[in-house]
Image 1 (cartoon, rainbow, N blue to C red):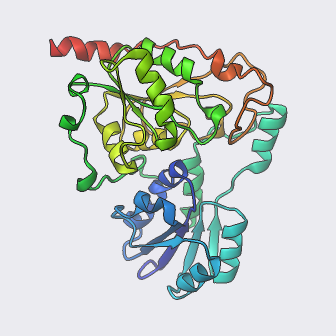
Image 2: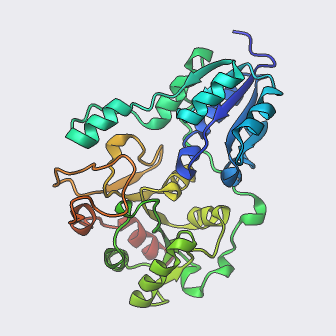
Length: 333
């Protein structure tokens, strides 16, 4: 297949974790097709996720007008479109561009059977490998190097910016989540932090700051530094990078931690790792309540438990042993 001067458009409009999960496709396509030009299209809100990626030649952003975006993209004269989102908007975009496209299979019927009837016919394949199927016609293979996340120098956090109690070693805990049923209730977050029993940096957006403050007040400044809402996304990634290990709900920071090759303790509520979006190519431990017949109740999440008991999080066992931290502590003595 001719590769010189081929132009590809990769589309993934949202969200943080999903965009991070597309990075192996971007890297492998760029590295394995010499001369190819790779563009990426996402929402303007997610610019920071792709603007420092050296494997992307040019970025395009959806603001409010799909018509304006179509005109911008038509002017590029792409040879191929790689649709890693596969929704109505990307379908319309592909039709209007009128070039050959390859589209990610979302396995919606299988997900529906799993969520509605607990019939798990999901393939034992990570979503990244299903993303990679969209470029196999170009003889692109997965290089098995995992995810990418590029932190610009200006956003590197210095340890001296942290409280003295957290400058030697700490655990990062990403307490946020797009939906409440993906997050532990605050009393259980407090219980988890007490079980971790090491200095902890809480990460999340401004919307998580209040929960972080409740945790800090319950456990004290010697244990908790509430960084929620104090740092931008790249700076939060820098804090993940410096952490000894990471606890995270099923959220975007979990995938950024995986990109940074951190060991992740992933916390699962209404979703499950069988949906194919567990930490990729990094060591991880899944914390989930497998004694329930109601999981998964959604492939995304809800504001509250549909059954009212929220046992997936309220009864989640914290049966882990942070031996690696204890070994690290002994080695520092």
